[in-house]
Image (tube, rainbow, N blue to C red; front, side, top):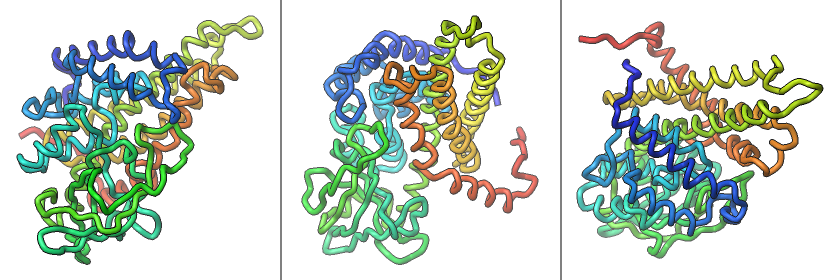
Length: 401
């Protein structure tokens, strides 16, 4: 593959980087900018989102006909990394989870009528959305086949009963994509469907306290006790819920990695700046071999992550599901983010452990990276399954015709 990016993509990257520097980072440094859950205050976010939209830095992931910029996954990799130099970045450009993955799924599979009703309001920034799949034990988590929430046909609609938890953004979401069981068929037993916050028959039981910090809307436990969803709100067809989930989660896992690379680079940036100034026993930290080894190791691993992400992005742009490539990127970058934050805190010492920098914020946030959208171990099992199926072809190169 050619790693050269177009001048158009570079233009977006440069404009995003400047916007982050000039408009977002100054707010990030002010404690008053944070809400009670340690994310950017909604009023500040709304103001910056309007500025980003007016600047044409909005919904880069979607096609122009759906309100986006049509950059493709490779272009997104470049720009998402630049966005997440700030902990506030992605939401400002309407590229944060879970809206990001939900919009891409709706763009890919929703009908024209569904796009008007469910996609356009999220694209415009009028509403937020959530993806309701994960359930408490013994329900489905990384294994969707274990889902127990049921949607039973009654007349021209489904009636939903069951429970979901760790539903990101549910506290602020207006539009929901729900994955529920509609039959006992092991492959065609799940169906994806759409519902609105205003509909009766469901409720948020609690906003689950986490190590934090949190996304807007938190991670909620919700229950269904008679939610009615018309057949017209089914995504794809009845029984296509597993397929819809696969279409959504692959690119969504990759966009997480794109953003985490930005945070990893920010950790290195803070560590290098401090090491260049801090002196101990007559020697700058930056001149100590131990610190140089730590930063050099991170620089290498960030570049490895970028290559893994870009290869997966390229494969998706070529029409592949890139399951193997996405799993490798997800494992590597999730662990890299934790190492980058930990190393930067170590170099900064007590300063890194304090709230004088965002390192402690990133450190607490980073621990979830090895769990969300599939734990490390699940993705390693996926890779082993590919290895057993493909043998030496696991490492084959695509050949030009």
